[in-house]
Length: 530
Image (cartoon, rainbow, N blue to C red; front, side, top):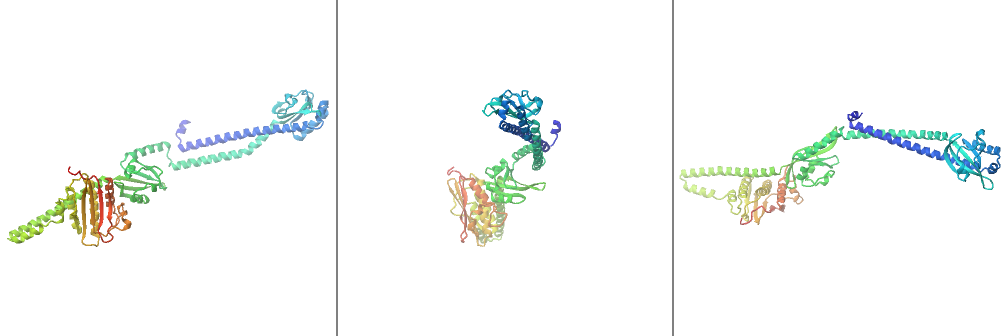
């Protein structure tokens, strides 16, 4: 039997258990009701017998007739009362317990079969006893003569079979309700089992336990952040990596709107499937993927996965800077070779004066040379980076220069962060100056040291930033130059804030003046004199 139960599906076991439990409860309840009805009927019949006995005992002159021993008159009164009330018997005795009236004439003159002492002592007695006529509910009261003296008793009984018949009638009337309750309980148990099966997708408890263990192992073993949301836009699950990447505690049951996620992540979760979406959360650059989850045509919510791309973005920025510098050096080498060939040709033609004049014109320092050899900036990383950006500025038709007020005589202790901030600010400025209608387009970079703090100011001749976008441009996905942009300033600000600094828009430039961004980067320079 137990083996068969173990081989049975859990939902069926649960259904059988529920049906058995409902049947047991209904059975116990029905039995309790039957017992209460039985007790109530016995009490009613006892009180009925007592009331009849009181009525007979109160019959006029009965007490005097019992005292005088007028048996025929007493028997007549008892028979009349028995017929009128439907009692099994009405027995009257004298003060010694000798019957003066009885349904069976042979019993007259004999002592009663039950104890008459209670009634003869002046008490009223009710009970269920067995006598010469069988089991009955009895009521006994004393009989008094006109002087008030107790001269006998009246005992009235109703057949116990009448009680059983009345009980069976009541049980028969109650049984349909018990059967209905049982049927309702079985139907409810069946419905509950089906709901449970549907909610658990027909999986057994062992399968569910395995799934939970596997889920925990997978969620906390993968290197990606995982965030699951149900159809009510509430978090159902979030692993430790997602909490680390998003930089905030996330608990199951939290509404999605309360998480304060970056705008691009919110738009991803509001949409359908999304692949490899770049976003910024805190000081991290993340790659997000979004997948809706469906099963058997039902929408179960969605899952968001996050990968950390911060280090990769920083390496990409460095690589872009190296490529820019390499391109600039290649262009300078090519230009230098052309100049040497020109000088050689002029010398071979004995045009010494022209060669001298040509050398004088080409030795006027161009902007890239001036930046790469500027004594105002000691850091070779910044000088090389700025020289490389000068080459790109030339390609865009924009002038890039280092301000005469720049002065940084310490080396960098955080070159990656500085290049990330400076590079994004300069790239943003070059793009703004390039697409602007103002000519000539130009970008001016001002670098100042304040102890170990580096202050970067980048001005451009672009069209400026509208007042409603002065803060929005620092939010990922927001750009004044079209879609699929808007990460540069967001990354730059997050990097600056990660250092304990910030980037602000000092002048929006909407009135025809230059647009100016200022970055404060603390503790990125070595101590003075080190």
